[in-house]
Image 1 (cartoon, rainbow, N blue to C red):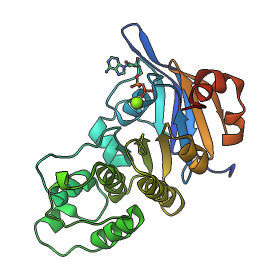
Image 2 (image 1 turned 60 degrees about the vertical axis):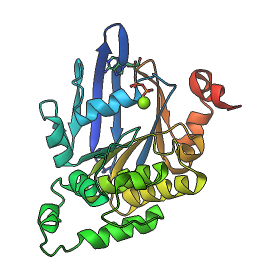
Image 3 (image 1 turned 180 degrees about the vertical axis):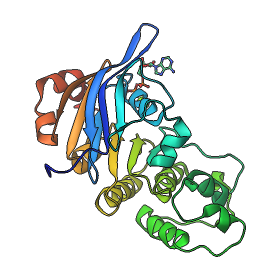
Image 4 (image 1 turned 135 degrees about the vertical axis):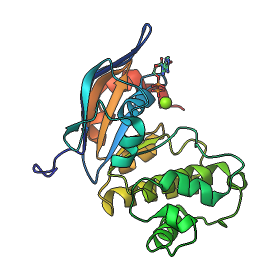
Length: 256
Ligand code: ADP
Ligand code: MG
């Protein structure tokens, strides 16, 4: 890794407890621009909680989260999105009974410089539609603007959530289980989108995913958590041969 490259996101001793459950236990790791970092671990380990802490849905009990070297502890969730922390959810979140245009504009209207609101009210848009087309080419599908969001199959809705996040030009993307419910071709397309985001857009990506194929394929760095604690961190080869990881997580999946 480039020694001069500074993390775009850094967690320092972040803890979060829900009643008796320790969902994040003094978690420390960094996300670098242009890299895909895997976040893996058993169900209930605290992966989604970390994303909720980073995006400001939850407040840490202790510890500090830095975005671009700034402590964002007091920054509300919507401002974190605006400052460049994008995310997708385990289950895609769209306005039901609304068309695709509204859904894309809603999610993308976050200071990306394209002037979505202006486009929506009929002014000339530069950049937005070209970028959207490029992203859809990578995502491997297209649609009519006025189609209802529910007309898209589940896999395409999940891909569209990644596209929507990219449209807001984030500097960090938190991507929660993009491959779940996708067919093989859609998984390829999801990987292509994430690869594009990292390589072409220099976005730092934190990827939660149970598909080890996907994780080992596109992540340079992997953090493994169990019961809220980081039990290992390293490159794919290091993680695959780590005894603690095999016992806590990988071993269980061998015959899955
Ligand atoms: P993962 O995404 O790794 O499957 P989660 O982060 O969703 O795990 O959950 C970690 C633990 O924290 C689980 O025990 C879960 O039940 C608990 N938890 C997460 N969010 C909440 C919440 N809002 N209220 C209470 N418990 C929660
Ligand atoms: Mg989860």
